[in-house]
Image (cartoon, rainbow, N blue to C red; front, side, top):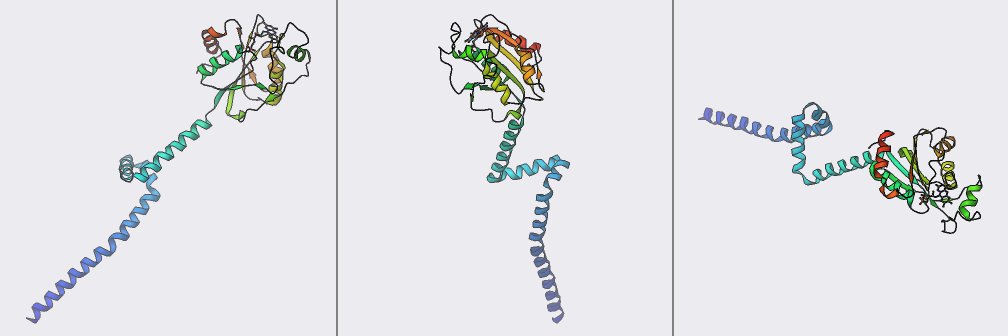
Length: 247
Ligand SMILES: Cc1cc2nc3c(=O)[nH]c(=O)nc-3n(C[C@H](O)[C@H](O)[C@H](O)COP(=O)(O)O)c2cc1C
């Protein structure tokens, strides 16, 4: 009888040790394996795509973690867009003709657009070229005139290609374009000139721009007659093709 009791106690003791041992080891081993997955999870994902898939499923089980992933992707998308190099269309337009062409180029090139706005706007009287004493004519007769631009371009570094548009005034760019080129150093950039006018063509303005921005490459310019600015899209497209600037 004593023997039976001893055997029974021995069996009970072994069973008790087995049960206690399992309970104590499990959480610590889970914790260790969890933390190693968290710290090295990305390496594992790179080496084992199927593990990456499992991880994604695990993350989706927790809605708060799923949101983190989505937010992170959104931030990355934003950074990529911001850093991407874009074209910029800069223009001055007193009566809207050059503006129409500028908008066509910006649309076709998915470019940003910036209007050069004079601090002192030009009135109809200022623009009357039949009167030699009016403001626009006086400015064109003064090589030193630099009408002040209202505002500025915040981040010119973002742009590699800059389309610059203007009307022809007395066979040249309006003086406010000289203010623009004095203000911005466009070294290393590509400048693409375009203009509108009554009958004069580009009037040598691409060469003038090249002299003002010696570190820039100036491409072939485009001239559009002021009577055809609203039907210029085909001409603009052909020109963009010709100069290799098709989007
Ligand atoms: C002061 C002034 C001078 C101008 N000089 C010329 C000129 O020399 N040759 C020409 O063909 N057109 C000339 N024009 C006409 C403009 O170039 C033309 O109407 C242009 O499309 C206007 O552009 P905008 O509407 O963007 O200001 C002149 C216009 C003004 C107001």
